Length: 317
Image (cartoon, rainbow, N blue to C red):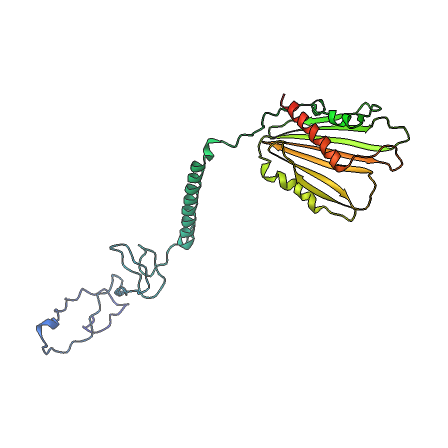
């Protein structure tokens, strides 16, 4: 049997519980002399003679996160526990735990906010009703044979006729789709009364397009103004607006720099009305030994303008 103040023998037989120590006087009662006390009495040993572990009072962690009510802070300066985690224990690192869990929650919240903003934009702009700009075709119709609508009277009045030695003259093609209808017509001309020894090449290329999904207006002028940048040592291009045709029209004329003789002309006339675009090109070359002479760019421009007015009218019929 051990005496008070002695350390229990962990290998000895179980000891009976020790009587409780008398309470010490509170400091509030004033200083009183008391008999010296011995070392603190150890708690009674366990049933196997082992001393239970001493319970340490929790320490306040100045860097710990605020915890929920009734949950103690993490002890000391060890790992900071998540709210509700026992003192000194690190939070679990399973899937969705720790900073990674907070990260995907923030990402999910951001995606929800972005989706809500985009939904508001769609409602404001009418994106949910499937509406889109309606094509303004200005009354023009698709035809499988544009040559049937192409007026050649202006060229015949100027001394030209279609070549008759080919069964493929004139040539036409067409294509119809939900987004774009395109039509072409190529006519091979020759000067009227030209002899077999005369060499000439005279072509009229005509194209028409019905744009059903995209408005060609914003890019139409720029498409032909780009010719002004195509300059060489032999020729350049001059682009001018034309009045009285469609909503807007332009003429592109090739100007030769190397030759003073009139051996050819190359002129483009472009017209836009609504979402319809039209282009006719006069390309002529006449040999210098030929008895005929080529039209000047100004003369070719006038022929194209007259033909375009009549052709565009027929395309609406």
